[in-house]
Length: 431
Image (tube, rainbow, N blue to C red; front, top):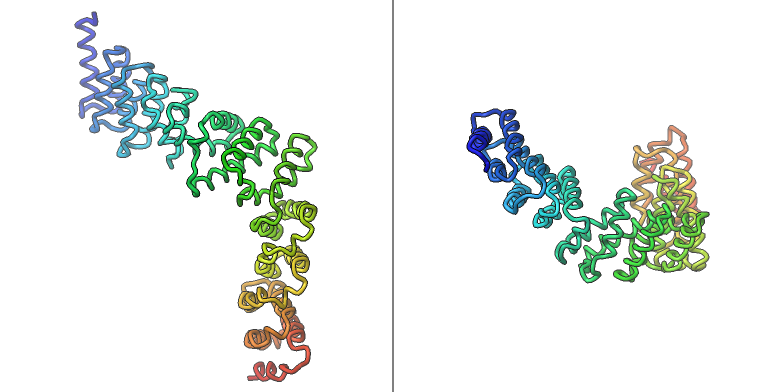
């Protein structure tokens, strides 16, 4: 028997919980007292949860109290699930509802779909609470049903890039999910491949053999063309570095990946060129240089390919980079790809860009000089396009006799080697 006196005590604490006149502190104390009444208290705690007149703090305390009671009734789980899904509630209330469901454990399995939805919530504390709750409810929650598995895949793939333990757990989980449930939509597939490749590279460099093997198998089985993906190609420099690692597992794994990459794929060379002239990362430039050595072995005629020639505009831009080393690298690559690049159509299209650099006072002097020198290499074909801008530059710097003046004059001598247009230029300068 529960007893008359106990009924009275419970009624007293319940009245405090539901009274709009009681303070937050009084209600919190009342909730703690109610939990002592075990199952008899559950309906009253649910009432406190459902009462939107109660503050978020009080409703949160009621949720925690239900969680602390452990395995409980389906109605309690349903109430917490409802609280979790109501976006009108504060993040705090929804977070403690998730925590409470986790504390209840396996009997809260019906709330798994709602918790999965929160894994990608923009509020990190809410997504973190959902993740912990899921693992407490069921260590293999992602296998609950096909819908849950399908929804869990993107989240588990992202988890591969977290801590080593999370990556290991995620790899094990992904291996168990039915291959037919993996995304085949082009956009989703692209995102999945991107994360899997990044995780694979991370596992490769960290010598996480099991993760690497699992991810390689998943990629080969589900997305056979993954090595032609933009992400895989972009990581060629990293794979090159791994290829020379002293650990056989790493070097052999990298070699196998590199051997599968098509060196003349339309994205491979542009990606390496981009890395080679990356002014923000000295490490990336060095790795790209190593990758080019591998590329030479794989395809000695790579520089004659269409993808190589498509990089000429980017390399011309790099000829006027702030860093001298970048300008030197760009010059070497251009000569490798097309010794007569300066007289080509791609170079002609870059004249407005180079003229803009030449005329921009915001650029460093050596950069503006580099722009003039680059225009000079293009020869007579650009004479009419550059006369107005060369004229203005000569006028502005005539009295200064600085480096830019000499650079423009030197460039003009290459553009008009016969001197036929010199009179025209002089007339512009004097007018």
